[in-house]
Length: 366
Image 1: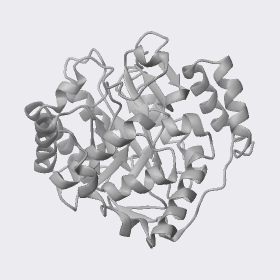
Image 2: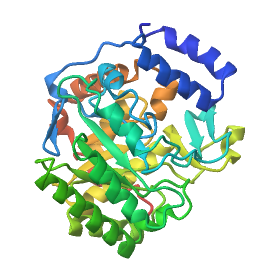
Image 3: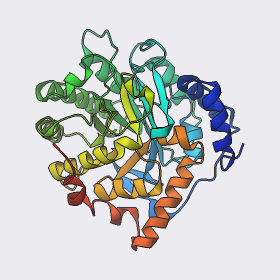
Image 4: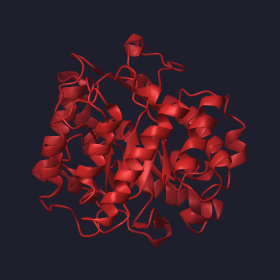
């Protein structure tokens, strides 16, 4: 099935007949079937060298879509520059009670309270070890902790140890609002212990048996205040993480109009674009020019991606934009980015990165 003009008609029917989680399951199965295709955008102006990796373009699929590493290959073939699987926890868990995922079409937003539902480390590792990725495909692994873990840090360490042989990079996710107490790991002392232990596990794996440095990124919540954000960034820089992912879903309901806005959970989508981009720019100011930043939150168009990069991102990710935009999303967003670059006289995405940091950071409420 070609992914262009057909999707708006299909999605209207799909949204009427299925809830958000059922539709997600159908999307994963369709990608696994190989019937959903799109023409990737290949342009040298989009290439990004970051984290010791060569990204064909700066737009990735965020964690949450492919929790069990079932379709990273098909996502890359749709034109995403990279894909991030997970969040994965050591032991399979069912997550929170259903219903737990809600589409808000009038707001181009989604609310979820999934709670790290996934099939566990062993299942995801088997998928990633099956060798079904395009040559050179970049796949990150987003690691988390089981809800009932006695030592949550140990769960993150286990994720590093399990996936080090197959991960292009890691994201340490302490920012989901749907696992009670998880965001407490963003506090300075707890975060320092978490990162120290996970980075030590990464370094041990690099020595043997992996034989390579696997980058580790930290994903933060958009609901941190200025003090909490500054402390988290300081600890991340002090411990030596390779990058930061900004940001996860928000507890805020600012700008929403759909009745489902009253549902609990984290909100993603276009209403998160401005606050998450301002936060990204503030982190660029705090962290300096060298650390890799991945901008997430509200990307649905080429202009959104242009502004994420301008605010200070080296790379970017989306998920909710794919819910409403369908399989052609990566192609459409990247073509929109190139069109905006041409209008602005920007020769490459690396030239664009960080050119508007101060202007966006001025919008950070802190």
